[in-house]
Image 1 (cartoon, rainbow, N blue to C red):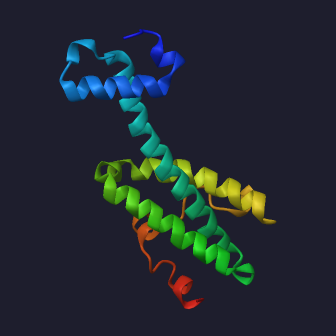
Image 2: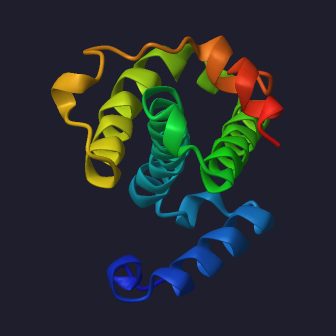
Length: 149
């Protein structure tokens, strides 16, 4: 196999690596790049849960801090991002221990979203995330979310 194919044609590289794995030809596998790609896949799951949580937290903050401006779009986004986060956790249970760190990182993104989309500023929001991991995945939180249907 062409040693530069990883850099020049990633798709061809993945096809070749898959074929080698299926054939059990471990001697010809591109181990260093396979390791890098597998690690990257795990990091991608972490980024995805952070992204879902960031959007979810941002909309929960808007919901809590601007009750007179609540929209069904906010409610739908909260429901959508909550489901996405729940699905990622269900598909990747080993992400659960990472949630505390993910929430802390996602909170910063959530605050950025609020500041961009509302008159609120960073000083108007709590320094740390006011929501627990349990609240973030609870479809009945906040209580008034489902009442506003």
